[in-house]
Length: 102
Length: 183
Image: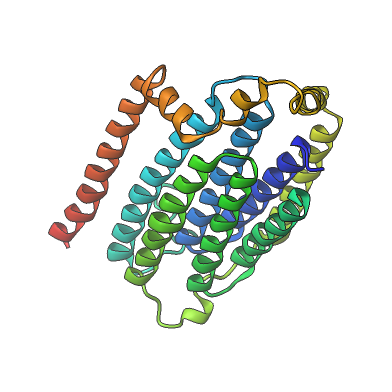
């Protein structure tokens, strides 16, 4: 029987895979993909606690809907920034985008 | 049956996520990301969250994956085979990530709160078929109760998230347009 802890462990595994992907990748688009995977893992946590929680109202699923909306907004703005950087510098490697570092 | 389906979909999601990380071709990464999101939608269905599963397919698999593919297309490289390489922190990131996973997994397994929630769920499930109150809990995850939630007590956050989406739309257009003027 699949319980709450299995879903939580799956979410933790996805979060860590997303974290590794966000940290080790050179391409800014791939970094954004890792961040999306981490957001999805958090959503899985919320929905799992909603399913196994004692609350009658679907609070966790409503939070998941809001997080999906915020993630969509984040991807739109993030990809617009990456496209702008690409137009200026002709690459999307995060190693070269150190203009704020000195 | 449900546990078999859970392990099938969990394996699909985890393997797709790993392939997304390990693939060196950015287009393949986007494809594996869409597969992982689709598998997550099936996991949501197993959790009886049908509305969240449909929204996941609509927004993540439909919109966000297409947005990523457009982003990859517009920032095209000469050679797609090496478009998604790793930086020099691969080993450190793997150690930190797996360490965090081990710590969180141990915390989940020894947590009293998780065990208490699981025990309460098991108790209501074993008492459920006998009592007539199980019908009310069975439909609590449906779209009707979520709409009552979103348009009732969460009406203000819903409007604010609509405003956020509008601001993100305007911001994305402004960021994309300003540079075209200057270059």
